[in-house]
Length: 102
Image (cartoon, rainbow, N blue to C red; front, side, top):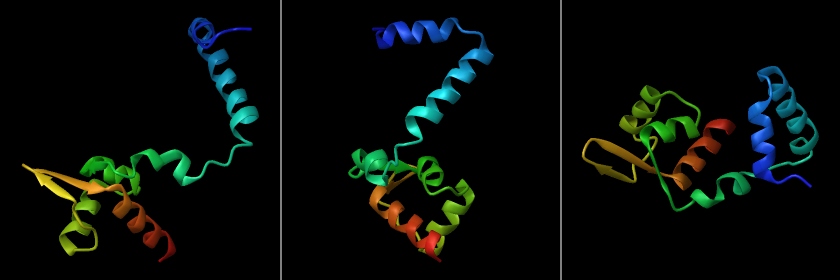
């Protein structure tokens, strides 16, 4: 049986095309049967706060769009530290759901 460390070492030695093929096969045969829930992927972040850039990426919008939503009151800030804005994941999730159903 090969260890994870040995596997990583072997992958690093592969030519790029072989490594790409390996990861394609891995995704196709291992992860295609897994139906990850939002909770499984992001559940550990429920009590965390995201920066403005992280929040924009999470809700899949541009940073200028995020700032417009904040200015219009459609998205609430959790905290401001200096010039940095922070958002609660719970609020971002609710905003994203509302946007997707609108």
